[in-house]
Length: 460
Image (cartoon, rainbow, N blue to C red; front, side):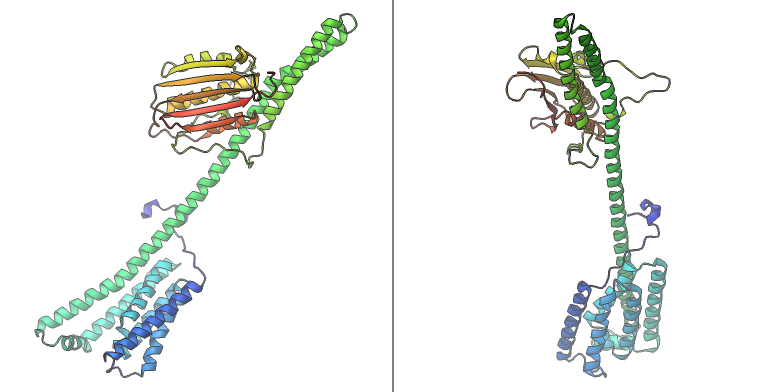
């Protein structure tokens, strides 16, 4: 991850130090066993005959450096310093042992860990710089006053001699050590940056999840406020009507029993409708952390920025709108409003004929809002130039219901993904009426929003 893209909170990020566990101990044991095996194989070949130290000292030195790997992640700088000291001491006293491949791998891992796991980056830079300088001085001293060149010449008997041999030997040694130490340090830096990048992504994912949770909670709260307003506007007039007709029936019960009975029948009908609507609206007032569907964004990414949660917010200087809410009869006017940019076809079906006219106001208002949101989605998030709205009502049978389906044949428009609050509003509104929602792409292409609301209080 580029430095410029790292949030300010992670500029001085410290990589967490894991505790020493079985993984570290196991790695140290395996490396130690392999190092001893390789050391004895080399001894069998006679390559260690010139080493003056006792074989048990050689084995102890090999196991000691392998044991450093146990703490390479918990104490990386200490391990790197001890590995450098071990490399120097063994290199001076037993150079053929230090040159074994197994020990070179262990030294490399120790120097790599210094930059990959160090919590203090300044201290890591100082330690690594110190190690490189000490090793460079050691190599320079070995070539200037030691037997470094002679050893290389002796190891390549029969090769051309002269000043070019010394130069070649020095260049080869310098290049190998630059690649060795530079590779270990640079690989450690890359690993550390990758760990920091993962930490940044995890932090961002946690932040996004927290913000999404707050948005969902806010959407539910706003929906509750909207439903409270509908309780006042849609249900309130039923209660007021009940009071008026009950008072009239009380006054007419002795003088005009027939008129009193008609007034009481109206009271009964209004009370039944009011109770049904109260149950439906209050059903949506569930807890924000309930088990209901929260309206996730579907896999196509087509969501709606527009949301019902802003309904009822007044502009400065305007009075609250006390007019009746929208109904199914207002659908033709709604479709006329969108036909300037979208060709919309409306089809209706009812059983028995005329059943759509008796749909409860709350259900009609919900269906109106569903069509409104769906057409807004088509206009904003789809390439479709036409849509179809199908409205069906069934009063007969064991499950009377009313259903609306909005479909289009377009494709998702690039760069128009919204927040998902529009679909969330649809799901919350329909759930409050005990209905079901099916939102998603069609197999044949396009998109579909299908809502079905039961008519529990209807008569078949």
